Amino acid sequence: MTLQIAHFSDAHLLSLKGAKAHQFLNKRWTGGLNLLLNRGKHYQLSIFKALCSKLQTLSPDHNVCTGDLVNLAFQSEFDQVAPLLAQFFDATQLSMVPGNHDRYIREAMGRFESSFAPYLHRDLKGLDAISCACNATSHACNGASCNCDEASAPLPCSNPDAHYPFVTLGEGFAIVGLCSAEPRPIWMADGQLGKTQLEKLRLILESPDLQGRTVILALHHPPRDNGIRSFGRDLRDTRALQDLLLGLKDEHKPSVILAGHDHKFRIDQFAGIPFVQCDSAADDRRAGFNLCCFESNRLTAVQRYLWRDNQFELIETHPIEAPSSPL
Image 1 (cartoon, rainbow, N blue to C red):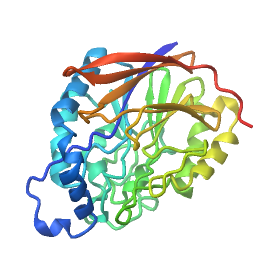
Image 2 (image 1 turned 90 degrees about the vertical axis):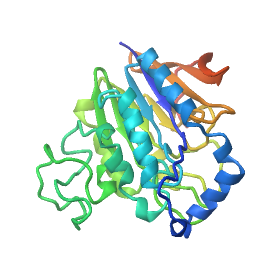
Image 3 (image 1 turned 45 degrees about the horizontal axis):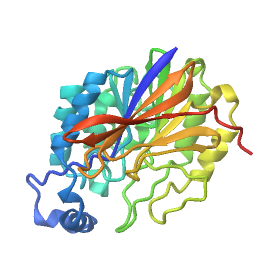
């Protein structure tokens, strides 16, 4: 079976509509400074709209976003992006995980899950998201102890982390979405998955419902086992994820791992599994997205599209060799 999965990330779309001065008395002042000196000059909503339009034209089997669609996690930013996504993607066409900018400060927790609920799928009942049919702003449960009917419970829940990992099941494929994003101190942009999420991930990957499918693992922070380190930006429990994946039987391992965060195109391996990152989705200096091509559940090629002359063009195709067995 052939399959095409589009991958985009890190649009960093800004909106200061309704923002007050006191809302910058936290980590946002450093982000605002970065916007003033650098990022705000380059990340453009018009480019992201063009990317969405191009994906609509290409019509892949599914689209995956690995986070950081917004910049400072103002509600106005989510309000700007959500209707734009709805214009180009229905709920069956897109899956997305949060990035560190989507959870930039603690007060913004839950905005991603509330705004983008249609794209956080719960297709594997009992193993992925635990949700509440409660008022997310007033309910104090932690998700796990809620007695709501999970099959009918709407998102969001008052515990945003209860939604992960989520699973999107499509014809011949499964998207497993992880959350590595969390509010971090000033100058820090690292993340972690946590023990509970990793335990759920093992159950999901070993589920009979995923067997025979092309399994795509999506998260924001790239796991690194090749010696590359970036202080304050890494996935802190990379080793735990690596040990989990190495301990799986071959038939339970994902076909590919997709990540964002670095704003750079990259193809590598992690725990013997193909690993792919993409360019930023809206940076006028090097905006881009990838189209991952699969044959019989194996990643065979990655097509890289870049923003050139006011349009997205296919600039290169990277054939993927069968991954070697990890040591």
